Length: 404
Image (cartoon, rainbow, N blue to C red; front, top):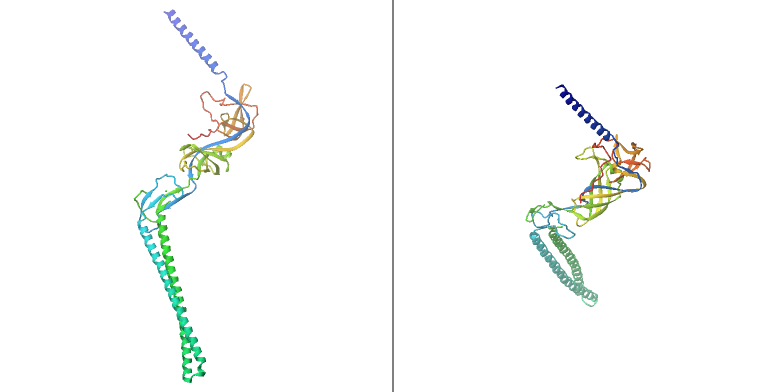
């Protein structure tokens, strides 16, 4: 019995020894050097391309309102929301029946005023002719009386006195007639001026009526048949020939962007339409992200030449041609790590890697332009000190292009 238990204990001890040996072998294997991917520092020209997303907005818009006609106006024609319009296109048209009646009435009044002027001119011409004839007769009478007075020496005293009286009467009639003619002419001029003013007012009434009718066709929410009131806004016209793009810029890309740089804008609504423009302004103050309070962003605006197929309100992917760096050193983005808030690379030295602080001049979506590093250095693409499977804080994430 004792021999049996001795054999069992021996087998158990042997199994434990084998398990310990296997564990030791595994420990030795796992402690061996691990493979770390590396890359060499490169020298050359780096063109910084900064990518962001934004939204197209119109730089100039006009609000269309109901014309001030007095009373309600009914819509008879209305362009659909989002329709493209050009100069002289009708966006909104109102019922013009009342205004057309007013126009016809004004035209009729204008014709009456013009006829009154023609009639007054004819009457003035007749009156002027009659006055000229009367003046001729009066002058003739005066001349005849003067001749009679000159012959007073040949006639009696009574006849001579009669001639003098007749001469005086003729002169008085002539003076009175000249005064009447002057009054007639002034009256004719005043009447003509009054009729001309009346015609001018009639012309203004016609012009107002015509303008009212034109304003009933507004050049694009309401529906056809709706009643509107004077001054009520109807629609907004947005000038699509020149648009702006508003977006957000990541903090790490702020140093690479400046006003005046060229940009290319692609919109999802028109994949084959590429818009070109420039950076207009970049905010000097950063704001926190809406969903990530740790991310700082800058407001940025672009001036872009519009396209007939692109309308404000659509999303856009923006590629900014940033600063170009010539003859600089650069490494992959993944080779730069954030160690205690400082950009750091791991440089191979013999069989190990040494942490080395660098200065990053610019980021692109694939590389980082760095200083304070040897041109021949070999850097790690992953943290060599991190445990297998552990995540380390590397360079800022590369900017993502908007989906096309």
